[in-house]
Amino acid sequence: MDDSNILQALNKASSFDLFRLKVAIDQQLENPYRLSEIKKSLRLGQNISYFDRTENRLITATVIKIMRKRVLVQNLHDQEKWEIPLYCINLDDVNTDIINSSKDGLDKSQLKVGDMVGFQDKYHNDVNGKIIRLNSKTATIMTNTKVQWRVGYEYLHLIYDIEQGAPYFIENRPFDEK
Image (cartoon, rainbow, N blue to C red; front, side):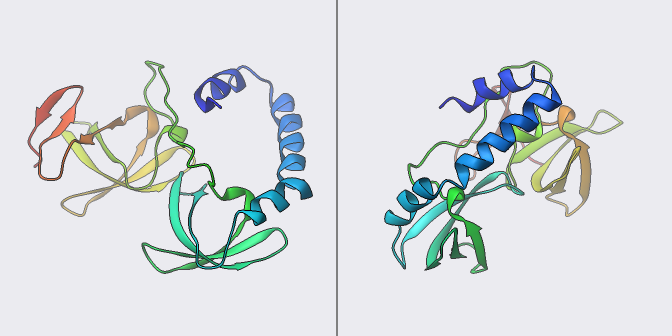
């Protein structure tokens, strides 16, 4: 499925239309047949990835316990244990990145915790850092100098680190990190 096209269509829907669609989607997510198919694909000790809605990214984890509608996992990056719904598991290795071709800037759905971003402060200085939290209207950014900023999504741009140790690229122009 092309999530980007679906989101563009949803932007035109009314709040009631979105609510009605959410109810229908929730019913499909809780469908016993669908849950059974997911459970058939899981084994204890299996490494899986699941989508974390608060970080808007995939997390790699190990299956510890399989329950009726949920699964207990241990994250590989921090060893934390979480009980997650079965439907959060990305069995088919689906790409979860959302691409927006709009010129209006970024929105929350396009960003995830850990992304490198940049913006200009009120003095038009370039500032860059890593996203540490996605809030409702802003992202919390931690710079290399350990200064935190809360910046509206529309003011952010992604910074791509092509390879470790290489300069970052903004709109195809290299710059040196401060």
